[in-house]
Amino acid sequence: MALSHEVASELERILGAGGLVLTPEGRLVYECDMHTFYKGAPDAVALPARAEQVQAIVRVCRAAKVPIVPRGSGTGLIGGAMAPQGGVMVSMNRMASILEVDLPNRCATVQPGLINLWLTNAVRERGWFFAPDPSSQMVSSIGGNVSTNAGGPHCLKYGITTNHVLGLEVVTGHGELVQLGGKTVDRPGYDLTGVTVGSEGTFGLVTAITVRLTHLPEAVKTVLAAFRTVVEASETVSAIIASGMVPAALEMLDEAIISAINAGTGAGYPEGAGAVLLIELDGPSAEVEDQAGRAAAMCRERGALSVSVARDEAERALLWKGRKEAAGAVGRLTAAYLLQDAVVPRSKLPQIMREMVAIGERYRLRIANVFHAGDGNLHPMICYDDRRPDELARAKDANEELLRACIALGGSVTGEHGNGLDKSKNLPLQYAEADLNFMYRLRRVFDPDHLMNPGKLLPTHPACGEGFRPQRPVLPAGTWV
Ligand SMILES: Cc1cc2nc3c(=O)[nH]c(=O)nc-3n(C[C@H](O)[C@H](O)[C@H](O)COP(=O)(O)OP(=O)(O)OC[C@H]3O[C@@H](n4cnc5c(N)ncnc54)[C@H](O)[C@@H]3O)c2cc1C
Image 1 (cartoon, rainbow, N blue to C red):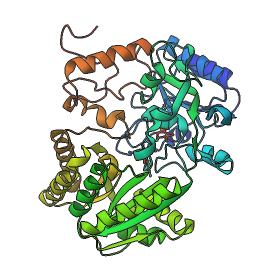
Image 2 (image 1 turned 90 degrees about the vertical axis):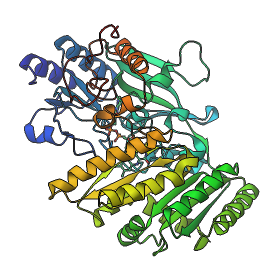
Image 3 (image 1 turned 30 degrees about the vertical axis):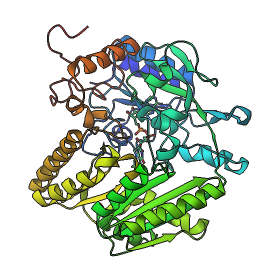
């Protein structure tokens, strides 16, 4: 769809000089997120600086029935912040301030475009941090984290984004500016904050967020254990979790990733191992000391090739730098890859890792792994050469087979990245028709005209896979309310 002259002029008036991108080359920058399979440039990109501008944009677009696509930093991995039907993309990068730090109440209020790590940087010296730590935290926005309900390595102990959001200011698809939740917990009425976290811009645009701040732990220890195989490492993960210990983080990296990371960052992960576990314990010193010893012992009992502990903060930081830059390092292994984000119950890790090896062999593709093992949240990267069409087709089939295997083991089609365009088609694998219909109806309460990020999060058709269509989802007769 092309934007009418009237709508463009109205948006220019609202946003002022330099607030609206209309040039083809300018719009092209916004045609995809980090899942580059899915492309769709918006007809215009709005760069608001204030919530009132966001509200005015929604009202103009709603009157003209123009789709609206919110965007944070565009690091999503699901085809979320892109515009398959055109329309107006609302980029939150200019709304990136910390509005308030309220340490007595252990919270802060920020604008959505604020980069995740910048909040921790602002409060660390006073002894606090913002716990949700997606590996993209150096670049992803807190608004994007809230909208995808992002996880991260340390979410094993601290909980995912939703556990740290106290309140939201949202411009709904109606064009209303509403306050959900607030600084106090357990407010009367429905938990609209909870339902909005993870809604991927389908309810409206988040314009301010009140988040919990967490006290920095007294002590931290990072254990690195190398194993012969990913299956042995997975069995150790299950054993650690079953013992009742909750490490701050419990990450697994396989052989392919280890060599790519070492070459890219010099992180010094043990070469030659089939897999390593990065186990971080934090909390009171005595407890951390005890748990680090127990975790190391469990690794040795299960045949670890080596077990070491980071000697100082510099060594620990280097290990984490390697882990957090793993996705970029994969460029050393392959021209292209498909990244899966799925979950299995933690006790099923050894089983799914065996299945993954078998799928890789069956489809003759290398599958590299770096993931939040403690959560059972897998991130296999299926490597392929995009110059060979048959490899891409095989990679897609392997990807879907892997997803079905996770569901068969009682898992979930997505762990932390969300649905976007990519996973919306897979939801019927996990939800019954009645569950999906309930979600469609909830969405319409916030966005009656289906203009907010259309085509994302929910399948266009519950029977799945009909591509993106501008009209409302078609449901079996009698089920649409
Ligand atoms: C190298 C790398 C590592 C990653 N590691 C992790 C990880 O460990 N854990 C994890 O969960 N994810 C991870 N991701 C994925 C991604 O960074 C997260 O999904 C992140 O939360 C997206 O934030 P963003 O600001 O880039 O949002 P975008 O990609 O811009 O948007 C994401 C979604 O949120 C919506 N949205 C954005 N802002 C708003 C707003 N203000 N109001 C309403 N809707 C909005 C968009 O429409 C879109 O649907 C990783 C990505 C990369 C590239």
